[in-house]
Image (cartoon, rainbow, N blue to C red):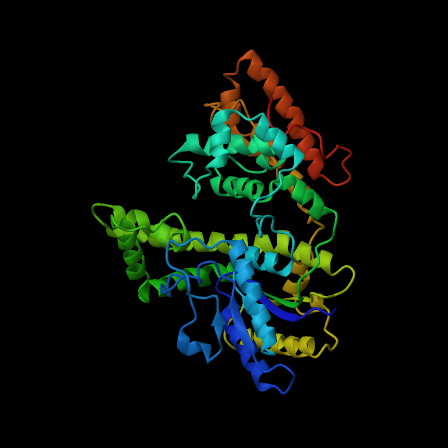
Length: 485
């Protein structure tokens, strides 16, 4: 059965993704074809929240030109809305759009959501069983588990604790995960309570170890859910970063601080049941101005620092967006395209604005969309621009879940661990760098004989980690313990 068409537009903030989506939708509606129009499906984790149009950078209603936008502005501040929920809602919206003989255009900067939409069966625990049957490994773990951890498993907290506020709760959850699935526990830092809770809920919902589910997923190549035209809007960081700074200044002029004040007031109300550690309260803007609004005296210096911090956070977020696309999304797309080019992917150079944006982004995208929907031949993605050739060429990266799990596991440095209940953890791949760092060497000079032996063990493991990262390495990639002994 042939796959239904989908258009996906992704990239950093500040490159014109929403504008392009609207232009494509208008063209599809105007051309004579079997498709009667298009609908835009939001894939931005912050734009799902109602109101707060400045802080979330929603396209104003007047600029949408009548194009329907779905999954936008329908959640309340503080309400949690995670990837599994969005994927289910997006699938329903896409199916309804296809039934109307319209094209769904998914657009947004949360590439993590988009990736799980494109590739089914890669999100463990999306459909929990009412009464899951326990696997043998989980049954054994629960049978031998200390009573206090068993009680914790039976009454997992609804929301992840803040590790900075309650480190004991955070380490207890991580220890519980270690008892149930040591391999996955080694993937997450104990401070990353959201990921730890997520892994524990997979165990509870499925009755299985997440690592077992990942192992099964690794046996098959990722198969796309839709025939997807992928459009990556990219701008050179040297040009994008000043543009993002100016965008923050423009947001301030449009009333961003007023929106932050309203959110802050809402969270401070004693009768409020809103959890300000979730939802819109995690957006760039609120976090940076929280300290300023909490201060007894709001000085101009503190205000300027908050603005600068927001600009820095925005630039860092754009960098992370590019990293995710190149390290996660593109490898999955390339793997899916091995047998059949079912997900043609193009980088559109959005470095320049104005007329050049139209010629470099809008016009090529309109032509690619026409050819894609008509099943005509498409051009070579690497020949669209120099940036396309440079950014679409990536080294082979692991895409199967088990390989990713092994590549990103963590080890404990007992030399740098002050409190054994709160171990100092470092990525295994970064261990050699950590062992040469000043803080580690300073503590190592005070080591006991036991710590001296431990440091030698870590050095051997660090050398192995370094060798694993080098091409043609003969080191066994499975060597080394997940936790320090």
